[in-house]
Length: 415
Image 1 (cartoon, rainbow, N blue to C red):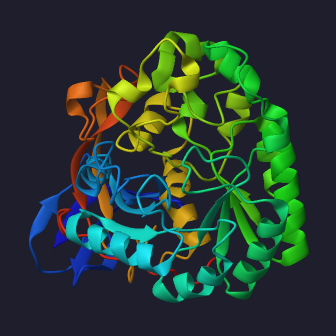
Image 2 (cartoon, one colour):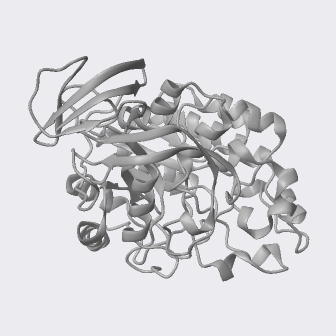
């Protein structure tokens, strides 16, 4: 295939060029390529490297009434994503053993529309499983410093975190951390959204991240802080071998929006202040933290009983484009290139010869809003409904083909 005349968006810049594809990989990039093959006219269109969402919960096997792999991965493809890494909780059994990993891998191989990796879990009783999970192909590990909301996936005490980090460092892997200090979290004083916000103060995130940084320095473990919500948390995250991500809901909404948006906006950590939101636009990793449920679990008069998770993986890139705040090259970097580099995802994240032909071809002249009827999730709703978006997907290519049969990604070298 030859993609002719598109505007190519890479993390390093934007250029008009053709792209030649053979055997699922990019073989050449340049103007007026003298290549044979089926031609796709991309004149007037932009071509991004396929997005990589390293933080999704597709809940299969187990809670497939909330979301499943087929619907979730189809939604990603519709939004320009060609790969994802699935989290180890919300599915049953949780992915903290090799046996559970095998069950989840088999489900992915049956149903994933795009390429995929799998996180393993670090919990208090599975230190002996870390090495076997790495050998089996786990992309890395996820741990919680506070209750996860899933009984089967308990939080790590500091002793488990320290020992887990030592072993993960020796294995050359990486640990993702939900960083909120449980000592600073409170039971909500009442049923309102404001009560919930007050129960999870920003200091809980900051203190937990500071502890993660100290443990990383002590153990030599690579650490990645998930879904940072505060400016201070973002500042203290980038020390040594520690990185951090944020999510569209922290870039678009603040604590003042939660009462208006209701249960659809409940997540942990919660949305913060205008100042926090402004700072987080500088973060170098943006992922969805797609954590869906049934609509019934997001409704009710008692905010304490509402499921804390956001459905949003289909819209991440279009939401970022719709705000008009980031250069196109930064959107390519924050949603693809940086993620591939940090987690060692081979041959993905760039439009360059030798890399997989993972491409999002998009018409940026198209402006719209998120509409419920366009969402491909198993449960068609999102807090982002009616939010401004930019870009209409013309086609998404996974290794040069339309999405349909994803391949398992094993980690390579990280940067």
